[in-house]
Amino acid sequence: MTLEFHPHADVFPLLEGKEFDELRNDINTQGLLEPIVLLDGKVLDGRNRYRALVALGWNEKRILRHCKEFDDSDGKIKPLNYVIGKNIKRRHLTADDRKKALARLFEANPGMSTSAAAKIAGTSEKTAAAARPEPAPGSDMSEPEKRIGKDGKSYPVKPKKQPTEQQLKERKAKREEKLRIEYEEREKKWQAEEAAFRAEAKALAAALVSAGLGKRVLDFFEMATGYSAEPADELHEVLNDLLNPVAVTGNDLDPEAAAEKRKAEMAGLDG
Image (cartoon, rainbow, N blue to C red):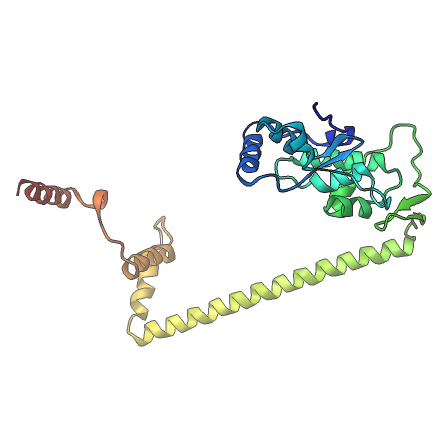
């Protein structure tokens, strides 16, 4: 006897290839850690686990010992909602797979709120809202009279209030005020950075003059006028080379030094 798959289980694609092999090998090593859930004698959750057990040669009696019936005695969760909530975060699923599952959740639960769907799927309300199917052409575009809340109960839907002209003006004024404040903060930051740079330049110039190098540096900048390279960049590069010397090896050696190095290496081999 082969167990059939419940239609609700088909909301997600089956594991194939390498991922299925990994699951089968994991069960073979560690055993079945999570039971297979049945509804009306069909596999509601655990299709991939069931397939792995069959591939491992488990007989029907042994498999059924690792199955349990779906418990909906309290009526709080529907079988499809259970399947989606249990599996939507599986690592092998793509973003499109998850979106389709959320769309099916909305279709199977007319009037379900976005927050309730997000709670079942364990995702953000933004993600759930993006998956809500668009109404079919010619269908009633109005909001349903009732919505299913997070607690599973139905609540009347409050009509959305459209903002007044005064509220729209106030919102626009707030946005403009926010942009103005952000601009002023950026200006203050730039001015502070420029002031700090100028102060450092003055301190460096004073140190150079004190060390008797002021005129020499000034002459260097005047001498650099007309060259393509910026004097500050040139000075920066030279100072960096002096303060952070890099060991010269391999291809960085000049030809004569490289030849001497090869002679020394060959002499060592001959010895």
